[in-house]
Image 1 (cartoon, helix red, strand yellow):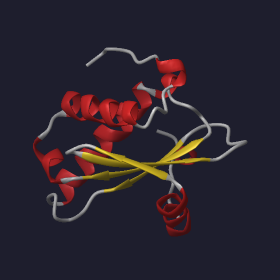
Image 2 (tube, helix red, strand yellow):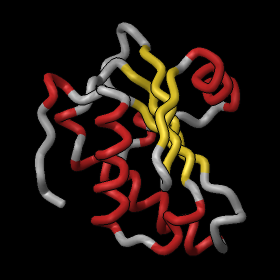
Image 3 (spheres, one colour):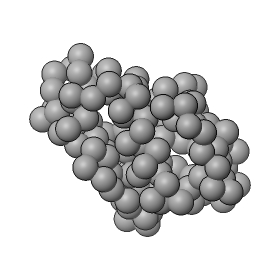
Amino acid sequence: MKKEYRVKKNKEFQEAFKKGKSFANRQFVVYSLEKPGQEHFRIGLSISKKIGNAVTRNQIKRYVRHAFLEMENDLHNQFDYIIIARKPVADMGFHDIKKSLTHVLKLSSVFQSGKVKRNC
């Protein structure tokens, strides 16, 4: 995933937490903040040290980024998404993570015209 697709600054995270809408399931909390005029969506990841060691946390980040890459055409472009992983994610594989992310993103109704591919 390209670097311009990522939220990196603390100020941008805090803005999403304060002004964005949050949706959650057992594995993830997703904050979505609409940014009119933005060319493509951006994601910010927060994986606590309580979830596991650096290897585990980085693997979860790679899985989440790849899941977003696969759902890229279905998501609205004018949003920033902040994803906070919860403890159960540490024991999940890629397909389970993608399925869980799809579920929480459906709850937040950020998919374009309700279409979602079933590649899980």
